[in-house]
Length: 371
Ligand SMILES: Nc1ncnc2c1ncn2[C@@H]1O[C@H](COP(=O)(O)OP(=O)(O)OP(=O)(O)O)[C@@H](O)[C@H]1O
Ligand SMILES: [Mg+2]
Image (cartoon, rainbow, N blue to C red; front, side, top):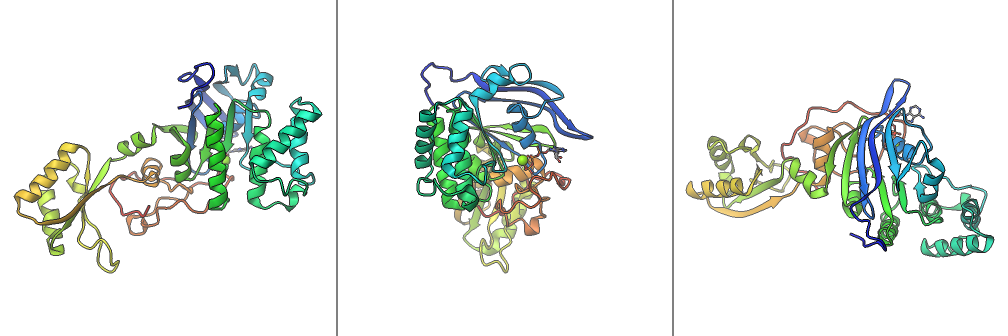
C-alpha cells in the first residue's frame, strides 16, 4: 500500500517460524508462523491468553523463545537483539510511562536513551507532544494524566526513534471512541510514512479499520490467516435475507427451501419476529456461491411466492471470530443463539491474566447479530 524510498514492498519485515514459548506447563506460543509484509499492518486477533503479548515480547527481545526463529527487519531475535531493538518501537498492553516525570521529560529521556543529542531529543519530544495533542499537558507529571493521555504519551514514546517496525499491543483498550480514532489516525499516518505495524487487538472494528491482513491466534497457535474479506468468506460467506410480501408465507418458504435440499438449507431460519418487533417473517439462508443465490431466488419464484424484499448480509468480523475460536472477541465463551444478539466487542474481563473458558463447538449458523 505504501511506496517506500527503496521498493521493498512484498518482503517480510517480520518473519516468524515455528515459535514456541512455555511458561511452566502453559504453551503460550505453540509453533507460531507469521509474516508481516513491509509497509503493512498485520492485525493479530485472539481471546485472552491466546499468546499475543508473549509474541510481541519475543519479537521485542524481552522474552527468549524456547524454539523457532523470528527475524525483524532481517535481524534475528536471539543472535542480533541489539540491532533489532534499534529498529522497533513498542507500545505495550500496559502503559510504561514514568509517573513522576512530565510528559515532556518522559519523551526527552527516551530520546536520550536512544542516543539523540539533547537538542534533538528536545525537538523530537516537542514534535511528538504536538502531534499527540499533549502540548498543553506537557509539563504536568504523567500521574495526573487521564488514561487516554497516558496511552497517547506511550504511543509517542514508542515513536521517538522513528521505528521501522512498530508493535502495538492492544493500543486502544479502554480508550473512548474519540481518542481511539485519534490513535487510529496516528497509526495510519505512520504506515503512510513507511512503517510496518504488528497490532494486537480485541476490537474487531480496530482490525477492520487498520489491518491489511489478519492472523487469528488461539492457545498459542495460528488458527486462521488472511485478509478481512477472505476470513469472512471462509466462515460461511453471505446470508440471504428474504422478506415475503405476506409474512405468513415465511414458514412455507422455509419448508420449500429445506425440501429442495439446497446446500446450506439446513441453516434456513425464520428470523424470530415474535415479540422482538423486528425482522418479522424474514427468512435467512446461508449462501455459499452466486449459483446458490440464484437457485434460492429461482425456486421461490417458481413456487409462486411473492417477495417484498431481498438482501445479502456479510458476516461481521465479530461473527467470524466467534465461528473460528468459539469465543467472543472479549474472551468470554460463546453465547447460545438465544443471547447471540449481543455481538459487540465490549468489556474485557480477565484481561492479561490468561484466564479463558474452553470454546464450544463451532457453528456457522447465521444468528442475528447486531453490527
Ligand atoms: N510471565 C508469565 N508467566 C507465566 N505464564 C505466563 C506469563 N506470561 C504469559 N503467561 C501465560 O501464557 C499464556 C499467553 O499469555 P499472553 O499474555 O501472551 O496472552 P494474550 O493473548 O496477550 O492475552 P490478553 O488478551 O489477555 O492480553 C497465558 O496462558 C498466560 O497465562
Ligand atoms: Mg496481552
